[in-house]
Image (cartoon, rainbow, N blue to C red; front, side, top):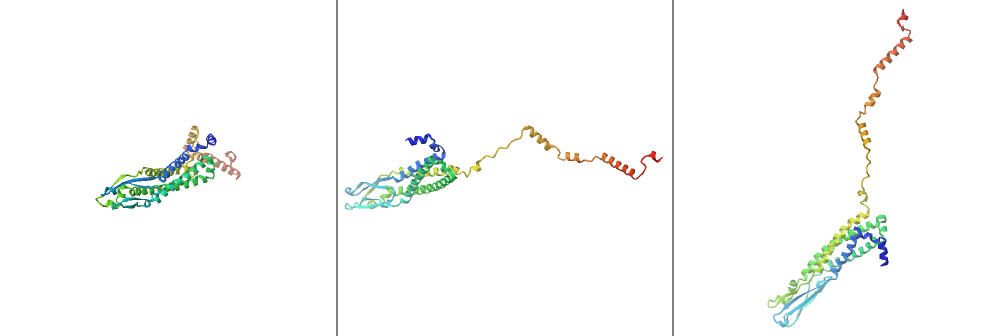
Length: 293
């Protein structure tokens, strides 16, 4: 108890509060109920054979059967209503394959849940290291989810056949003395099948738990993490800069360039006339009216 208290104080059991650990604990719990309700079952029903000769009658014939439901090995002795002899009657059917398969999946699911819970509690950091633990856990969880679907469906079908094979009305038809109308055969007690019905229900509950846990184990792998990151926030310019930038876009981009390179035709004509006057002066031509006189 001291070790458990120290672990609780250190927060080792916090993983059981998150969906990953909590659902795994539920899987461990329901796996126990699934295989125990099926594997520990034993049932019984009674029939009565009333012969024409009352002394040969048997009004309480008990027929017992149990897991793994190899009914063809179960038998009972019924009166033949002929000189006090009895006939041995065997039940029909072998449904051990579906029942044993269901119990086997339940036992292995219980063992894996126990190991996974231990790793979650004591070695959770190593479990997440290098992402190997979550990937292995995801694969095993997927396999068990599929196996629960197959085993639960198979056992549900097998249970339906077991109910039919152990129905007292069906069993009476196999008693030779009951074929004689002078003898009277009837059922006294039906078998109680509530435990087996519960085992099928627990099987499909385990299917839901293991299938639902796939999402939480998948999140631990980190595969989806890059797709869940929000985009980086974009910085918005201040209100003044926004108006200034908008005004800059509204200006004519060619206005400045046209104004800078537009020639001044008046200044250009004046410069040309000055150059021509200098040319005449260099050639010795009259530069003024006074010199010509």
